[in-house]
Image (cartoon, helix red, strand yellow):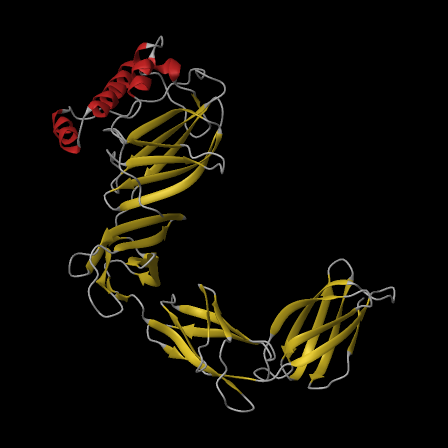
Length: 434
């Protein structure tokens, strides 16, 4: 989740005044509440809330707002929105209520709305009042992204705003007993100050984000975290932008987990050689796929490396024209760098002649799956080719070996060839789709 923008002080003074003065009563400007909550009339309390909003909007800085908050009387019981007909049948409203971990009202939480429309950059931001409530009237009926932020903790969701209705969202902030701390360093080992640190945790189906920054010694501490599976990230500034380092951590109640990050750490490295000659092969494409994607090429010495990969199991794909493509699955990447040296075999040219169920040549897209007959001998590949008007195609990156081959053409049929031996100079394979 991105960090929310600062609160805009001059929020809708004219709109609030019009709401107070220009209606027969404050309830006349409120749309009727949708199925989430229905409430009774309480005109005096609503006027008090709007007056409070106006006072805060007039304040010039955070210090003045804090001083005014100390002078306010304790909040009364939460007023209930009116069920009067909407002021306009063409717009809707959104009411957001925030509570702290103990269930009490959470004042001055920043609530930001962003309209999910590629043609619109419409965005609104308001702080919750002393009762932890904020109301967004006169919204365009659409899907809106809702961000709520308070003191290093944030939450977001999407909701639909409908014409003539008030949608209500209740956000209960969480507080746990776990913590994550550590140090963030550059590639040369120097501490990185002001690196942005975040922890994203799934709690009861909702995703919560906690954030902080490293101090001048590169140290950080994320605290009061709930238990659960946590994605910890460090955003560090590099030339041309920001690089994000990430790792999954399992948090238990009361646990303090030490997690250090270093930008530019080598996660996976190795070399690629020709299996026949033993010579290094330059300009080989090497990619790591899932849970992150990264791609590189070997240098003139046949060497390659990946930096700052997120820990997890990866599929490594190695390819170069003239050699068989290699897929290696479940390659585990952890905190320390892992070496992976690879030998490539010259590719087998697999010539195909494909016919459809009617016996005529099939022209079009053909999907192919290669599964080694003996696991570990060869490589499992899923790929595709295109046959011509004669039903012919050539796949030039097959590895030698014994394979079960599966062919499929959408809307036409499929075929399986078991125990096919792929080798140099082999005869074309005939594929009959059924």
